Image (cartoon, one colour):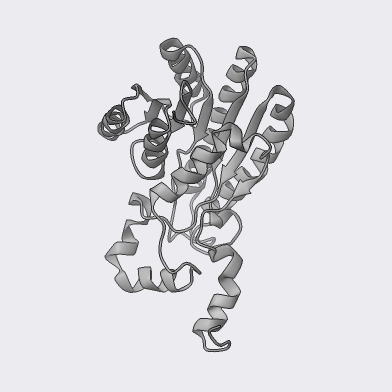
Length: 267
């Protein structure tokens, strides 16, 4: 038996990358999955992979910037499966190489609307449905190590991911009395379409791997493993916090920089 047998998971941004990885992992652990995104072909492929695990899947187009569409997503999930148990607010974008001096209002608004407002709408809709069901539930949002760091080329992205880290604290406090937990996952460098340029620039990928204590870049499965834990009763006492599957890069940033510069010796 899987730890999510009989559960229903909703995942936004599930057409590829970390979203697809989480959807498939939930299915492997026994959950039926609602696949949400704006890329129909990608959603169809994710749903196919879910069904390969002998679980049910439906696809629901959803622009998380639109509250009505997010509410309709939850309604569609309940209409098909009768309830929801896990909601993952994963949909996100990254404006890169647009620094604090050149970022336009439109670029700022797009990133904040998807990465922050969209996460809020998704968590809110999930929480309200779980309260109405009077059942325990798991809310998960996707932050980033960039919610901890700063980056000159990603001011809106850093702001949005830092905001997600704070947002789950508010939801965790508000939802905890109802048996609903809310946590964030802050991935490090993961091989997804968003980081495709890493593979296109092998020297840069090696540069990042050298600065990650475990010595390599992560995969969507590494993020999915954390989500799978947070979705289960094993995580019932984990609430309002952020877990970083990052290979230790946020913990070891400065010591690794010093080691690579030859300022400290290998142990």
